Image (cartoon, rainbow, N blue to C red):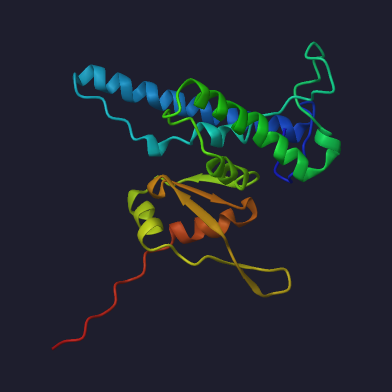
Length: 205
């Protein structure tokens, strides 16, 4: 299981268990949300509408799932996650994570139906690879989501030596999800909770 510090640990390790539990809760919360929307639509006899932007892409969930240790038998209870993927090198471990949880399921979907949304081009798979280790932040506020798309802020973080650095991030699904380095998540949160800038004053004629 990939943990917050970028290392891969067996699910017998506390950090790995914590990471997996967070992913389980995210999936459960998503499913309950779908259930509630469907129930409301049925009760009101209305056309059911669900905003897919509110749901983290399944491949985003896949980046948070364990990868099997193929050096062990599946009958081994401890063989649920690798600790030494491809020799223990972090980059190779990340590559293995993308291969098993993104590329393989995507290509399987392409084999069934090339126009299925789950069928990804190689460039799209590479895009998911770049998100490994990043935090996926859900944006609840529609106005904040709009500003992220139309007026993307320049986020800046303080460095250990007292300087500043530019914070890179990626906005997806119409501003409803932001991929960002976990260590800079607080910078995004600060921007989201701050009052929006006042519109510029217009000079009179």
